[in-house]
Length: 310
Ligand code: VAH
Image 1 (cartoon, helix red, strand yellow):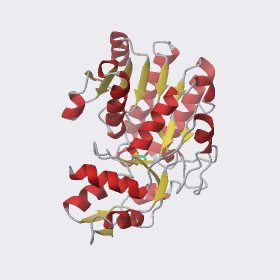
Image 2: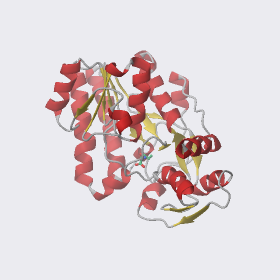
Image 3: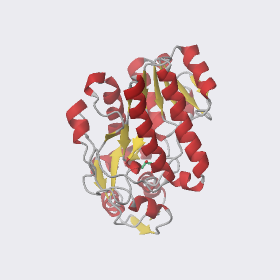
C-alpha cells in the first residue's frame, strides 16, 4: 500500500486520485494535517497526520503495512518567507521522518518533491543544467537544496530508494495552490472566467518554467515505476515542461475570452521569481527514465478553461 502525506495539497490531491485509479482506492491512504475536499475524502481511506510527528507516521505505516510514501507536505516559497522557522521545521523534519522510516526498512520506496526554487540568482537562467551553481535565496529554496543533499546522502549511505523531481510552477484546476510564487498561473484562469480581468503579482515579462498538472503527475508516477538501477540522480531530477511569461498567458487566454485584460502590480514575490531560472534542461530525466512533456500553453489554457467552466 501507498501513503500520501500532504494529500490535500495542490499536487497531493491529484496524486491521490491518480494512484487510486491505478492501484485501487483501498491501497492508497491519503493523509494531511486537516481534511480535504469532499471528492478527496469520499475517494478512499484518510488519516489526519502531522508530517513532523515521527511516531504518528510510524503508526500509520505499521497499521496499513505501507510500502511506499509520497511526501507532499511542505510550506511553499511565498508563505515560507513569512514564517521561516515554521517552514524549515515542516519541510525538513517531515523529510527526516520519512527518510528514517526508509532507513529502518519500515518502508521500501519514497517520493519527495524538490523544485526549481533550489536554483538561485547566480544560477545560469536559460536551460538551467541538472548540476550547476545553486545558491537559493529563499527559505523554501534553501530547504529544498538541503533536502536534496539529505536524499542523496541516505541513498548512498543507507541504500534508501528515494526519488525526486524539481517541479516547475504547476497549473491545475482541481485544487487551488497554497502560498507559491507561481500561483498567479492558476489564479489568472479563475479570474478570467469570473471577472474578465486579473491583477498579476509578477511583472508581465517574468519568464518561468511551468507545467500542466497532468504532465507533472505522469512524470512522478513514471519515475516511481522505473527500475531503481535506471535512476542515476538521487538528489532530484530537473523537470521541464514549458516556459512562458504572464503576458504570454494573457494572450493565450484572450483567444478564448476576447477583451480579457491583465494588469501588473508586482509584490514581494517578484524578487523570489527573479531568483529562479527561465527555462530548464531536463535531458537527464529524458535519457534515464524517458520523460517527455505533452502539454503546451495553449493546450493548458484549453484544459483549464474547459474544466473550470464545468
Ligand atoms: C512555489 N509552486 O511557487 C511552488 C514551486 C517553482 C514553484 O516551487 O513555491
